[in-house]
Amino acid sequence: MISSEMLKTAEAAVVARVTPRDVNRVIDEGILPAAFSSAENGRRVWVTACSLISFYYESATRLTSEERISAIRWAEPRLSAWKTLALESLIAKDWTLHHDFLTIDLAPFFRKTVDGLAELEAARDMVTSSPDILGGTPVISGTRIPVYDIAASIAAGHSVEELLEAFPALDERRIGLAKVYAEANPLRGRPRPQRELPAGARIIRDRRVARRRQPA
Image (cartoon, rainbow, N blue to C red; front, side, top):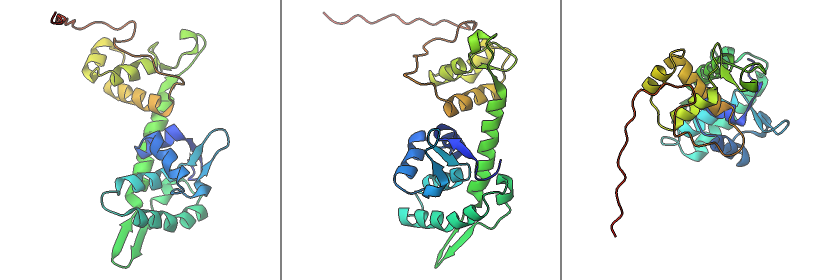
């Protein structure tokens, strides 16, 4: 992927390891240069912007807001000049900023972006959708297991071990990628509470607790 290709807000949040709210904040407050985002077809940001977003939040305990924004402004013309390069090629560049007594190296954040993007692309490749399978519901490739059901089960507190026992066709890697996919492609509307494992799962154990009576 070239450095100027665009990601949806939720996708950028997954790659930068922040929340969608964090991504929207750096755009709305002008922390991220305007050239790195677009409002066409929904809000989107350059894939390299994920590196700057990650840097801004991860370095908050060590650098002031002014120092972080200054580093982002320093990186802006360099990224604009190299926007046709592949993301991996940017890692070989020198991303060290020297200012008086302060030295900042942005290279680790570009490496994290490459890793985060690889996870996102793996999650995309793992999910398929066909009218012939559950009416087009996105499922994990090679199965009839809805990807959002797995993600909802994780959010509800079910462990990876429980899901592995309930769905022998899955492995830990695919369960993790299901969570990545759901975060990058959130369902519209209020999510349905997932108090139980999805239909088709095998119950491993069933523990019931007696309800306490309220005092009269």
